[in-house]
Image (cartoon, rainbow, N blue to C red; front, side, top):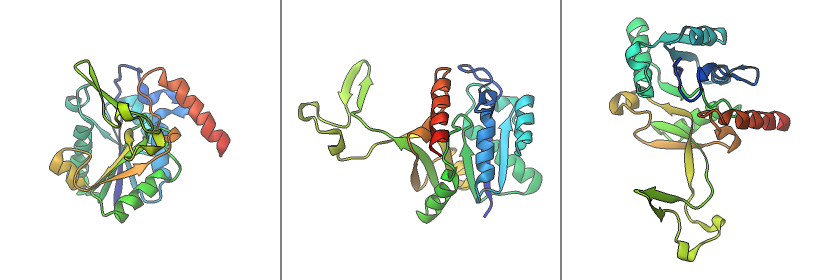
Length: 229
């Protein structure tokens, strides 16, 4: 089975400048995702999609291939799906390469568990699913605020249950990774479609880097993971 990992990594980012190259745990953030993919037994090709020369150099240093992303799909409003399709089109046109599965990693989630990627691929195959999303645990009472008006979504405030007695299980996308068949991406222009599986990660492994204040928290989570191993 040909399993292709694609890691989109633009050079531009607003909240954290050069976010994909920020040092984390002694190496660039991007390096974590590349190394996790290289350590996965079922992944046999890793491509970084980027418009940036420095990111290109780092990607190759840590063992990934690079597909250069055109400017038209490198701006702030460009979707990840556009980068994913571009990689597939490039590899097919240049090599007639067509993967069986795509593992889409977001470089801003460096704390994946050691076996998460292999286990998630196994789960997708075992469930005969077409796509899979990683999620983290969510505990609490959810409210929606629309047009300034709050309303409860998961419970009745007049009959407040204990948290453990809420009948449904709630999880949240954590942005770490998605796995899908190429035909799902091409048919729906989406990373998710068809029969969707949900892969649960721990709370610690679910943290991602979006804002500057996230970095101290992720460093603390990394120390916690390291000390528990």
